[in-house]
Length: 428
Ligand SMILES: *Cc1c(COP(=O)(O)O)cnc(C)c1O
Image (cartoon, rainbow, N blue to C red; front, side, top):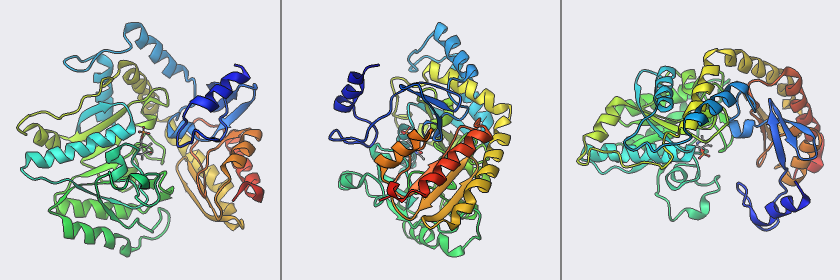
């Protein structure tokens, strides 16, 4: 690994949400194990991000690696059109056993955004089968559902990075985001905006889509379970199907296997991704009720018109099965609970810090909302120099560590965050 390679990257390679002119520096990682990322200078840093909510059991996990090696000897890939294979069948059996009984039919795809595109296409086709041309979607502000076009159309229009495409993406309906937070009292006025919009447009709305309980990149807010319950009641009343986007929250992150379990409601469509393979390879799934699947299938063509080339990739399915096998030992519950406890102990007191507006903790998610936006260049450098990998955005410093993190390593993460807050130069 020479200096030239880093320079090549800087000159030629686009990174997420970055510019090709003077991009922020990238750190070269040469390997990863457990909760550590090894940098090219030999230094190990503690990962507080789980590679964007994905590597829930840490890196280089022996069980995940073994599953990949075992599968690669049989086949890495085979087309899913007209062909099926044991890893995909096992995965769909696993997903059905983990999710509520109502979710019965599974469409596998490559990434979270694509799983959302599929869910949206499904509902448009569902209404088409019923002889109605519905294409409007209702969602809530501060949401994030991905970077492809249909996903952009239901992500927050103001706050997202998608503003410049505004004239190109379908116009959808946005209700005010709930204010009542997860751990506080329910305020009945929260549902007013959603209720008004659904009442007024009920005959035009094809579906409601939202992230249950945790709004991720759109602001890292945790809202009250009663809000989700009320939404489900309204949707049931108007017979409008609901899509839950659990791409970030699924597989235990919030302390429940799925975040919707906090509210005891079940969606009509569920999108999963990110941690489904334990952070190993990209894979996503869209689960629907039998009713929706059958209605779509009763259309004139009888088919759902989608089919990614790498659909049901056997390597991805095999490692997802190993990931679920680890989850089924139920260790994750204790792990997430003890992370939550420690975050309350170590982060909650920061609420009195002059640069802190709010502290939010749920499961293995810790969020510090600051009074100032971070200086990305300086704070990223500060974190790496202090031995941790944390990637804040705007005024939000947050951690979503692997469930396997030791209390010692977690303490190090929160200590470095506290040091950063005491260093005003790291903020704008
Ligand atoms: C990351 C994310 C997506 C998009 O998933 P990709 O795999 O990045 O396409 C969609 N919804 C939510 C809630 C996410 O966190």
